[in-house]
Length: 198
Image 1 (cartoon, rainbow, N blue to C red):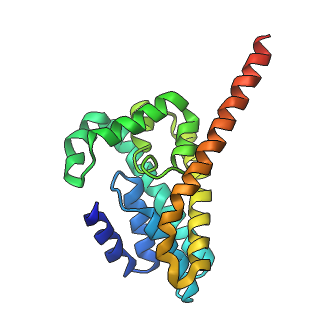
Image 2 (cartoon, rainbow, N blue to C red):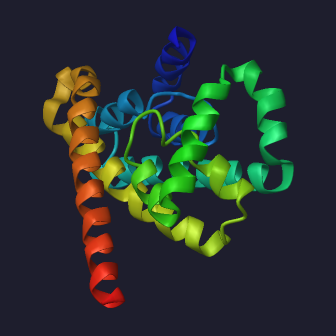
């Protein structure tokens, strides 16, 4: 993955446009780490090279455009297309399987929560497209998931200032919180269905 960290560092030199491109790539199956890109966007705000709104919009729109691109590739080309050409950008079978299993288990919720989880967010468009999830629902749940991830990491990069690069280590804890919330959400749905069944 060192090559993608190098790519991310190269993109950072482009400022806000680099944030947009980096987030586009990350959401379109290219594992450029948003844990680096988004905090840097916040750092640009710290340096007065962008407003907070500009930085957040660059990250959010880049991620959404990339997600839509990935969705349509998967919907029309299917998994075989991604498997065939994914090896050229270091997409492994294991990563595809993981995203697909997550989607099969959780459906719409997988797109929302998948956007909040490192390791899942890059590939969640694939199973959604292959399963022909309606585009409107896919876009809606992608937007819901992308907003908190983008806003939180960008803002924290701004707050941390010159120490923005340390933020990547904290995303593991953030992902843990998301998983706990997801489990609570599933438990609530299960309990409500049980009540309806009775």
